[in-house]
Amino acid sequence: MANYTAADVKALRERSGAGMMDCKGALDEADGNVDKALEFLRLKGLKGVTKREGRTTSNGLIVARVSGTTGWLIELACETDFVAKADKFIALSDSIADAIVAADALTLDEALAADFGGKSVADAINDEAAIMGEKVELRRLAVVKGDAVDAYLHRTSKDLPPQVGVLVAYSGSDAATAHDVAVHIAAFSPVHLKREDVDADTVATERRIAEETARNEGKPEAALSKIVEGRVTGFFKENVLLEQDFAKDNKLTVAKVLENAGVTVGEFVRMRVGA
Image (cartoon, rainbow, N blue to C red; front, top):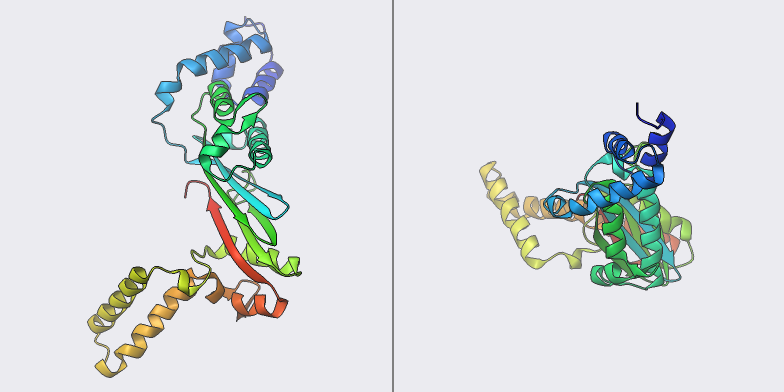
């Protein structure tokens, strides 16, 4: 009979983030010694690095950090939601975020090279992935700067860590309104800050599609111009933050809410796991 208990399996799962069967197998190999089993999982994981390279990391979490006038948003990705919600994976993401802020990393390459207790973030991720038995990757990093920065993290499921993150760089003293706008961005997924930020070719394509659709619908020629402009305006309202109806009061646009609060948004970023 194996020389370990269900409590030992639980302890190893919490320490490693590995699956139950992997933990049982490691404890079998280690004759019930949790520390030796942890080492066994790591060695087994290192041997499987090449096999994991081609795997898909569609789960994970988003972490946000704000330090002074700079905000960071990172996506740490993994293969399964089991690992994504494991305490060890969450702790790893927090430590990585702290290392990135300490290094003042502004690009993904700089983030991966940041110091992590004497080794790089990239090496730390590989070490932990070996123990977890899954592919883990720092998939994205976004950085914003402004007079002030607000961060908002959203859980799409109570059983999972944050899956959506938003940073808003702004000027003005009304932090509450800036935060409300960050929450709005999480819910309504704008792509651009203002209409002028939309690529001219994209606008031209939307206008062409709107005109072709109106003609196919048999709309009168005299009304085409007004119909097309209305549909292009609808495209802007869907994709441009300042033109969207505000989540907390759809009688006002986001632009009007910001104006009333004396707040100016300089830039924003929205990140969702796997998107």
